[in-house]
Length: 173
Image (cartoon, rainbow, N blue to C red; front, side, top):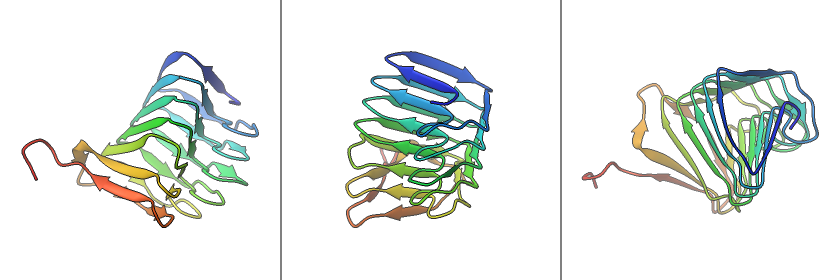
């Protein structure tokens, strides 16, 4: 991680601004080996590298984004805004991810070995170059129990066996 690198820790970030960092992977925030990070509001922008310029989540780590903005990242590889892999979990409640560029998944690239991606609320994942959400073969996107807000927008690209799953609230089939 160019700005923040986490390994085996719990981190809570609120209102941070991580801008214009450079690193081969995870120029903004890098999670490796059992990290648990919650970011409320804040902004990640203008970071650059090979993969996951905004955030890279790997090795059984968890990342929860509550609001905020991830924008203007540029990578030569995959996942301009975020790259998620290796038994990791990502949750997003509201927030905006736009204006990112990558070979695949301008906003996000999700590897098949990750556990889950859950989104809800008024998420805005649009306007990213070379796909918004890219689901590798076997990866899944889950709409959380609260559902999507009336202003939510999500663009998705999937390989042949990627999946989109919507979980209905209790009592609704």
